[in-house]
Image (cartoon, rainbow, N blue to C red):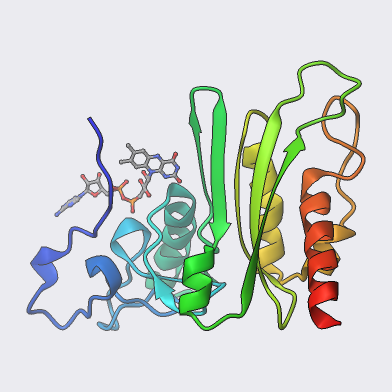
Length: 214
Ligand SMILES: Cc1cc2nc3c(=O)[nH]c(=O)nc-3n(C[C@H](O)[C@H](O)[C@H](O)COP(=O)(O)OP(=O)(O)OC[C@H]3O[C@@H](n4cnc5c(N)ncnc54)[C@H](O)[C@@H]3O)c2cc1C
């Protein structure tokens, strides 16, 4: 059985004053307040700000649901908390392969008007001196004008799930590939390589962008 695609189950709100947005999700502001001042929404049924695009998005993940739920609940009870948004980070494991992505893809970047480049490379998950290293393939999307990371995708046999979180953090902090290239990421032979694959792919982007500038 294969099921794909998610839309919010909000049919019962049609013809009410509660505005719906992308995928039928309830439109909310940064305080998770809907168009009805006494109704807050969170989780899969609500829109969410995409930090990379700056637009309202629908990103139905458990990690977003628990955070927006906490803030919507607090605000509904009189609080004044703001939810800054999501970079659309997802991960899964199929057999021995971890698959993950964060941010936007190259097609979306182009459709949003970025002059973006896409870099792809393969790396070893840890040093060759320790047996058992697995291959990791990484794609990054970078804005040539600002040199900021726009998105990353990864697949491999080890360490993908947690490495994508470094890219998610970099996207949230609006880091450039120059910053990520020099990021102090942990190293021990059984865990990584001296330059972590994240440093390496961003170093490659720096070279390409420097050539682009000449
Ligand atoms: C198979 C599967 C695997 C997933 N794996 C992951 C994962 O690995 N990582 C990840 O981040 N996300 C995952 N998700 C997504 C994640 O489960 C959802 O994003 C998250 O559960 C959303 O939480 P929620 O509270 O918004 O909605 P839900 O968890 O769907 O809760 C909504 C609740 O409201 C109840 N309800 C609905 N209508 C009414 C009504 N009219 N009156 C009263 N109650 C009602 C429902 O019965 C349900 O209990 C997965 C989803 C699925 C389906």
